[in-house]
Image (cartoon, one colour):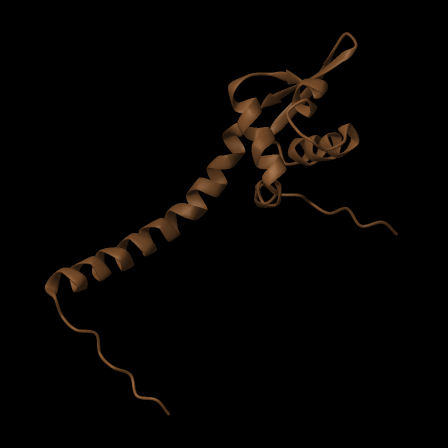
Amino acid sequence: MSITLRRDVFQAIADPTRREIIHLLANKTLTLNGVAENFKISRPAISKHIRILSECGLIVVHQQGRERYCEARLNSLREVSEWSTQYQKFWSARLDALGEFLESGAKPRKTRKR
């Protein structure tokens, strides 16, 4: 019995190499070799990263003649943006409160050692 794991966008962007591939492809379409030229890892390793990004819907690979071209499809990153926005609001509120506290000149409360 084989288990198929569903990859998601969060898994894709967790790896720095995949984030760099996304960055490269956000600006232009590249061949697999064109992507691989930007890294000091093997071509099979790049192919694995490309496959993961493709499974997550972040890139599309299409054949044109003998070459395979990679093109970014970044709509899936909207999910990441929406998720992170809730924490951005949370941390903004916390940092605003800290800023107000520091500007007020109040001294922090001492905590007792147990």
